[in-house]
Length: 308
Image 1 (cartoon, rainbow, N blue to C red):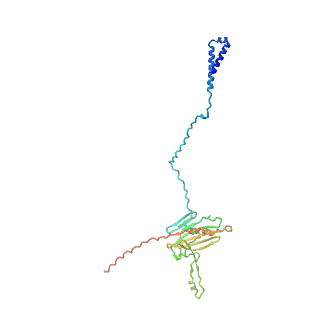
Image 2: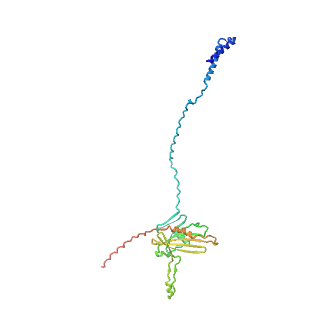
Image 3: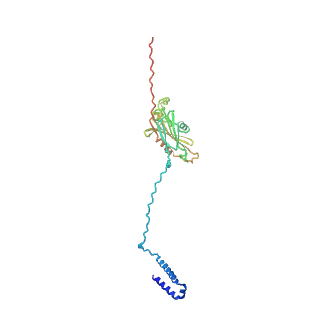
């Protein structure tokens, strides 16, 4: 209000100083000047009152923060309707194969990578190789022949190696302990006064000496025969055992062919026989029951008719 009164006094003084000019404007001039000054002062006071007030730190308006909502737990995945493909299982074949002959109760194992022939094929194989049966009497039948791969002993004079099984049902237990090869020795009696014919009659063949070998519960008779021609040499080991009323023969053969220039390395025969003997160590002979024979009662003899 003080400012308004000051402006009013100034307006009146100016009116008096202007004199006639004020009168010329008329009676309403003072009122207009006063109204203008009043408007200016009102605007000035209003502007000063509109200045923003500094908000003290004590009267700060608390800011409301929205509480953090926990994220919803994801729902468990729905199991697919289709079942996953089954995992492929690779089955490995065993390293050995089991040979079984139910007729003669014979079983043995041999490495899968070895070749085997049975029956007539085994007979043909024996015939084409220097592996003769070693029975003292004919009647032997080949059951099986296992052959080592030709590449078993590379860069040597190795030619072939076989494990053979034969059987002879016509031999007795005593004959089964004997071998045809090597040939039996003839015993020459000491000189005497007997005639030459008597000395010849008294000469008896000596049974071929053989050694014994235990194979589990089986007692085997064993012998070895070596044959050769030129650069080819064959070494065979034979084993006999009498079971189930027959003579079983197991033959192990190693054949070598040396080069003519003699540069080729000789194969270690003991290593080759070691592989064959591992097959022999698995041999088992199970009891075989003989087929039952039903005895038929003799037909009744018709009664004689008394003579008339």
